[in-house]
Image (cartoon, rainbow, N blue to C red; front, side, top):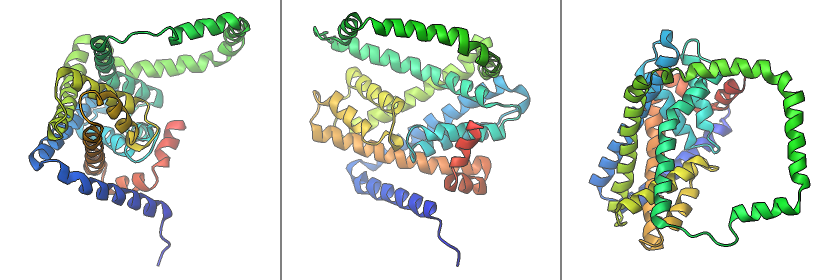
Length: 324
């Protein structure tokens, strides 16, 4: 009888603990709200896969990237991000695409990832700004900008050191790294080829991305309704902003803990802490396990069960491919 793989045991134990947590809280939400939320979540994921396919077809026309390949890689990355910290699933996604898209490069795929997230980044920033404007925060005398100015005035040598550092970088370092930077820039521009036709970008990337974002907001609203969290444009903006920041600076698997802290902090004025915590924890638990289940299902459809098993047990290989 062969030895048991410790990584497999740890992985299965982690997944099982998630399942227990989800089913322990699933009674907090009515089945029809849950079904509708998961339907919207699946639609959101599929639309992201569609935008990925269109971006990759524009970047690598001869590769004829299929929808299932693009969706399998993007949702597979989301599933792995739910299991590992620091956006490890993004590296795995790039590794899967590099192995599947003929003629692709790491720089080009990384650039394509920036293109794919551009719409969501702009939309989220506008939402955060809108929320900040609605709240009309006031600046105290000890604002960060004032503190920085006071520090630089008291330590002028910092400015001199920064200027010297810039000179060294421009005169010594840049000539040595320039050839590699130029080559990587050429590859990166290939990944952003869809920007050569703004109408095509609007039709094939921005439109499905906008529909995907609507589905994402819809999921938040459904969980808010299920837990009696007041639903207004302001509270919807707050939740979307909170989840965007949590995902952007995720240092734990799936941003667990960070999302709950931000939700409680942002919604404390409109609902009780216990209500917000129940809403946030249940939504995060349900969507995390759904990301994993959907990711495994779509990856199995796109790449086959053997490749998925290999990726799950040895996901570090994908990161090594990206680093190569």
